[in-house]
Image (cartoon, rainbow, N blue to C red; front, top):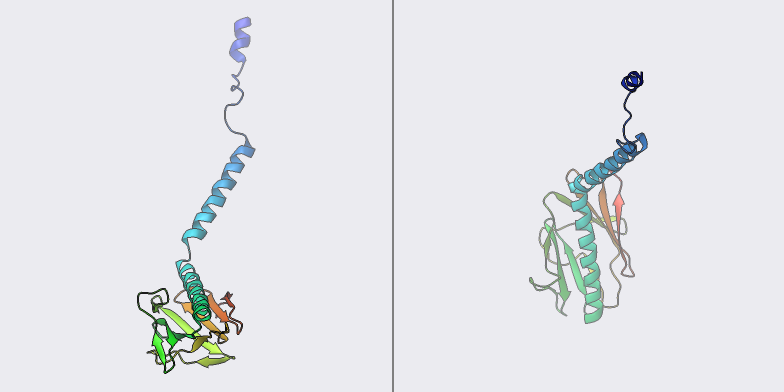
Length: 176
């Protein structure tokens, strides 16, 4: 009879074998969060390129203004269809800054569209730099401007706004 009891018993799993429902759900949530983070990091390369380009322009414009203030000479920023460049006012006209310096001419990424306005009015973006549209004055002031940058299939645009007191700000602009 003792053998009959043993045979009818169902073996129980050892304690600690397997996972509880809560443990499985925690793992699923962690994997989901990691997948979302990877998707956000990899997705939308146009938006990242556009944000990087707007930040780079703002940083270089701020550097140009600091350079103007420290050197005591006005520095101009010429916006072109293909990019932008920096020049210094030398009594009789604007002279491009050295091509190997920090404030050398830069190209926009392929497909970038730039629109410049001052006082709410559009300013023509030239094919060649005869004179700058924006000036960082030696006094620390800056020509107030709005520069809107759009890149190909990016949903948002970026706006670089320059204030008269020399401050620069980069904002996202809602889709068209």
